[in-house]
Amino acid sequence: MFKKEIERLKKEKNAVILAHFYQNDEVQDIADYVGDSLALSKIAASTKADIIVFCGVYFMAETAKILSPDKKVLLPKLNSLCRMASMIDYNELKSYKEANPDTMIVTYVNTRANIKALSDIIVTSSNAEKIVKNFPKKKIMYVPDKNLGTYLRHITNQDISVWPGFCYIHDLLTAKEVKKMREEHPEAKVLVHPEAPLKVLLEADFVGSTKNILDYTNNSDVKAFIIGTDKGLIHALKKQNPDKSYYLLSKGLNCLNMKTITLEDVYHSLNEEKFDIEVEKEIQEKAVIALNRMMELS
Ligand code: 13P
Ligand code: SF4
Image 1: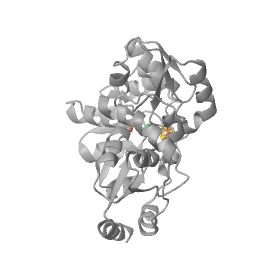
Image 2: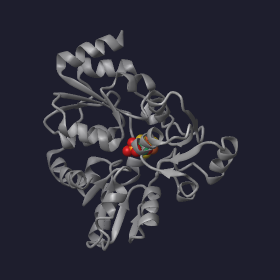
Image 3: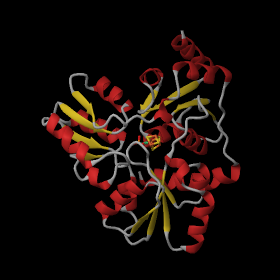
């Protein structure tokens, strides 16, 4: 019943539903587009729809609003928050900037709008390497993910400092788990998201964003994969390649903050046009500059 009503409301209101790969299976299945942070931001920036229903975490809907301030952006559950995004404080970053005026602030998209407004450029896990390589001579502070920042320093050899934030599901992964899973599934390739600690990434066959992992499995002749990111991605992987096998690297790879949204929430969100995400004009105007720099270099 919700499915039918959602379809009707979508047409009636000229709405588009975007869902991140970590969303519940039923939500991914109703979405017009399922993707990673970069792809969903690009769609949000270019859509002709009047309403964007963003099935993801708060910073994702907020990013869509920054990129499309004249559209109505709805987040079906207000408590759908990225824990990493709350690991950086506006005043602390402001003080850091004042004390280090020559340091470039490179900010992960997993942050709130006021942090983006203080930043020189935004990156996602899909384009971070490519973007920082554009600034080989710069002193960089990468915020807020210490793991992705450390990985970037490792692969680029650039002068990159890191903020002490992390993702609570990826940070728990260990190299020991990778070794154990390899023993159990020797035929499988290990694919890991760069929010994992460097020690884990060094054990992987491939490191990439959710979309990069999906592309890897599509383009590979290998038939089995150990997946080092949220279990929601496995639904998307199975849909594209049902004949291949996927093993979750660790039981803990389940971002509960991403799983709060149900089909019923999507229905209420569209029907009652809630929760309408707002970004203060002054913050939006600064944050969009950093986001557009990312889009130009992506
Ligand atoms: P992606 O951009 O790779 O989809 O990652 C988003 C995220 O929150 C990972 O934890
Ligand atoms: Fe945030 Fe981690 Fe959840 Fe991604 S998986 S939304 S980084 S808490």
